[in-house]
Amino acid sequence: MNARRAGFTLLELVIVLSILSLVALLAAHSLHSAQDQHRYAAANRQLDALRAAIWPQADPVAPSGPALPGGFVADLGRLPRAIPVTNADASTVAYTLSELAVRPSDVPAFALLQLSADAVCAASPAPYDPTLDADISLPTGWRGPYLAPRAAANPADFRDPWGAPLAAYPLDLYGLTNRLSADGSFADPAPFAPVAYVRHLGADLAPADTPYAVSNAFHADRVLDLTPATNATALLTFDVPADSAAAAVVFRLYLPCPCTGSSDADAPRAHVLSATLPATPGTVATTAFAPVPAGWHPAAAMPEGEPELRRTFWILAR
Image (cartoon, rainbow, N blue to C red; front, side):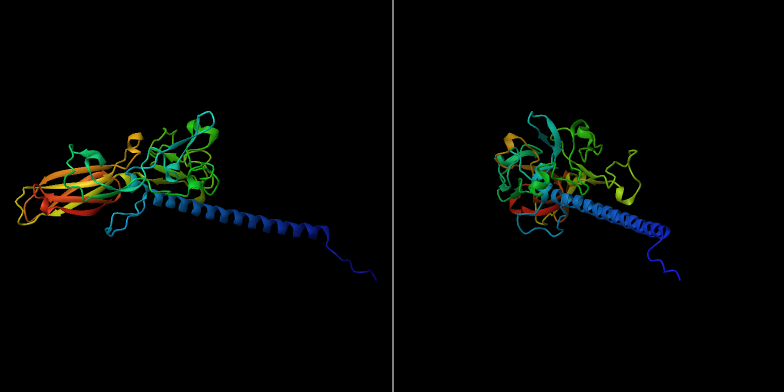
């Protein structure tokens, strides 16, 4: 009687190995999809965090004091600039959002600015009379870091979840695609141009309008549009007292001066907008200022020539 043969035949081994390979392939594909999903979600959270640093959602309740958690735009009255990064021979190799992490020398530090003629960089209309504004405290100036210094100061460290720097490059340096833009074209940026658009390109790292783009939910581009942050409207109202003898109401809105440069670096400045409108005692006078930075700003209103009826308040521009 023949002894029973132990082990597997070659055919059985081939079948088992094929099954194991198929299972491994399916597991790898599933893992890769899960990684893409995780990275895509992380990239969206990164843009949301960037938006919150530049232009946070304003609290609908008026503040009770002047020290507001305003974000970059509310503090400085403008969008962050594309800051050049240079190498040893002073040639530009990248443009980054380093202003969110490190205060440039031409940007004033944060302060509660008491209004005076010397503290105003611009007034519309001019000339500006500061006589009645001594009680206005304007929170203005750089009070970052708005992002962790390591995340924004060095383009090699400020990357999306796929490892691509969130920066822009002159002449498509190194073949890298721009993630920052002033006008949404994502063409080569100008030095110190405002950054109004930031994007990630999804898992394929390719813009959607190129042949290299992949049609997949986790490969889709997302563009963060920051233009509304500096294009808000402030609607001011004033209840004209019935016993007022004035025929007009004077409104004033106080904003951070968006200027930069050595003349502005010593101290923050204010930009004062004013409007004089006809009014009738016992009615509500209304005016709108636009475009202005989004967020809460101090404002004042009074019947013309009746400073004793002047009222100060906070207004939410949106």
